[in-house]
Amino acid sequence: AVTAAAGIAWVATAAPAAAAVVNLQDVVPAPVSAQPAAGVTYTLPSNASIQTQSGSAAATDVGNYLAGVLRPSTGYALPVTAAGGTPTSGIALLLSGADASVGAEGYQLDVTAGLVTVRAQTAAGLFHGVQTLRQLLPPSIEARTAQAGPWALAGGRIVDYPRYAYRGAMLDVSRHFFGVDTVKRYIDDIAQYKLNTLHLHLSDDQGWRIVIDAWPRLATYGGSTQVGGGAGGYYTKAQYSDIVSYAAARHVTIVPEIDMPGHTTAALASYAELNCNNTAPPLYTGTEVGFSSLCVGKEVTYTFVQQVLAELAAITPGPYLHIGGDEAQSTSVADYRTFMNRIQPFVGANGKTVLGWHQVGQADHTANRVAQYWGTGTSDADLAAAVGKGDKILLSPANKTYLDMKYTWETPLGLTWAGLIEVQTAYGWDPGAYLSGVPAGSIIGVEAPMWSETLTKLADIEFMAFPRMPALAELAWSPQAVRNWDTFKVRLGAQGPRWTVQGINFYRSPQVPWG
Ligand code: TNX
Image 1 (tube, rainbow, N blue to C red):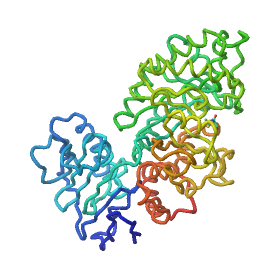
Image 2: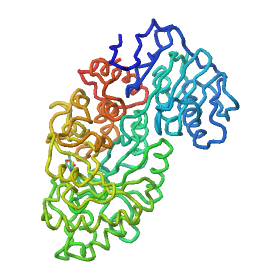
Image 3: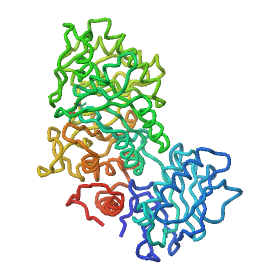
């Protein structure tokens, strides 16, 4: 049974034709509107084709992506062809005729007995519609070997679009380094839930993870260890660009972060001249914070930052460079302001927009700056300063969105400083009305950070992300009016079999009725 939400076109579902068919509205994140067509189902025939908008390479790419999901499990050929006229069978991905409300990232999905049509204004919209289509098929569609069908979908119409333009996850690749394949897998994980941004925390005290040609020891020495003293690692520019391209093909933008002026031991250890006393500290493999700072009074510091940001901007197609700015406890407030006010213009000079942890509110505003709130309360002086100066706000309240917090005291991984975060805690807040004194119009979205002090491998990342990342994705995508814990936990539970088929190691929260 589905609880109707006021003002939303949720219609009670008729008895499904086959027990295995997923109800049209049982998708994560919840769609804006879903109108089932009673008694109608579509069954994918073995000779189906995927017909994409004629003349659009981007739509063809989405078609090829969908074929890549469907071919292994169905065993069907599923040729991707250019749509001629109005398709009458198979799956169509079209860039015309969608409801105007879908905007830049939404889609309209129509399932009739004869065909499935996804319509959008952009390839990003088609891609999001394809994620919904996946979830409407049985969980075995996610297998990478041939499975028994039938491959049936519930009939009806979904019209769907995001609440926020910025829907993010963050991965800390500094405390523990994660290779290209792990990052790609996490991109696949988040894209399924319509997140569109992956923020990579590329530098910290414990490791520098991206090659900078002008300062080569950052990677070769600064990247040579990690928490606990393991081998660490770093991305070459070619590897980094491979990640950026892989993300772009999934309509995910990479936001690179170089954390400054604190969290900089890896850089300070690599170059003695960056230190006020001209002495390089040893590499650091512990988990303390707040003890390092770039040397604010030295000119070489600004040459360094300018060159790093220029090289980073050159391999970043997305709009943001994240300059960190958190926990600068070894930098005086005056020095912090001096430093930030001097480096922020480097970002704009490279055609990018400043994103920083909310302490950047202490420094001057720069055009379109975004402050990322990571506090545990609902107000903060630096946050208020940022808002007062005209910053936009990205929401990552640590006691709600931090995927490195333990679920319960029994959770074998993770930290507890911001509290325990069970699924209902992660889900149960409204991003538009959470912070006091911050107008809803200042919020650009929600990001779920994953710090990696205690996480060493993909299975750890996925255990902490699932099921909280999909829960937070719903906050970022779905209108508050369709969000409801009692219906969400059932929809979420139904994702479990999909994760099992995908090989995802997830936390079987007792709050969720797992399917
Ligand atoms: C705080 S959140 C930090 C990180 C830690 C994290 C652990 C933030 C901006 N700084 O340095 O990794 O807590 O949860």
